[in-house]
Amino acid sequence: MNDPIRQAELILKLYEVRRETVMREARSYVGGEFMIASAGELVDIVSAGGKHTGFVLQVYGYWDMVAAFVHHGALSADLVYDTCQELYFQYAKIQPFLAEFRQRMNLPEWMVGLQRLVEGSEKGRARLAVMQQNLAAMGEMRSQAKP
Image (cartoon, rainbow, N blue to C red; front, side):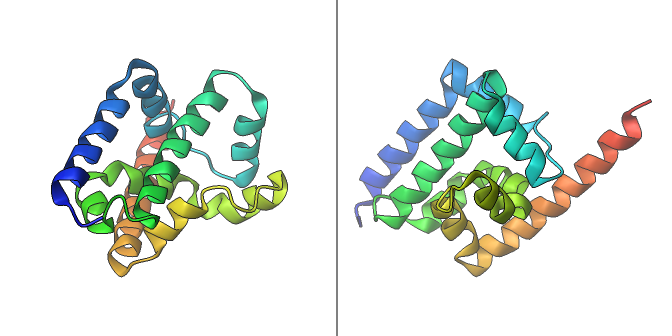
């Protein structure tokens, strides 16, 4: 798709979805409290059912859908890079555990589109590295703040 107006309209619609009440709650959980340290923790959360399972699947499913829009030409990768930094942050949280999670859950294609988008360009990989550094610093601050 080469029509920048239609792409902008789609980005705005995607933003509106992120503002929906349940999606906000899901993003709040995944963007905050959700700080897994292993594939096993991700397996446990996704397998448990309930609210946190739904939040994780909703947020990651949303970002994988956005990545599919890029892959199929509805959005440009550059536009998503410029307007969806959260996508890279959320991906950074699961990236170290993806291969083992996929194997343990027998889901070889889970988040493949998201992975392809983030890791498929030099600037995507650079942003991923920054996000992973930020997550490590956040984890360190959280561990120091606990009594």
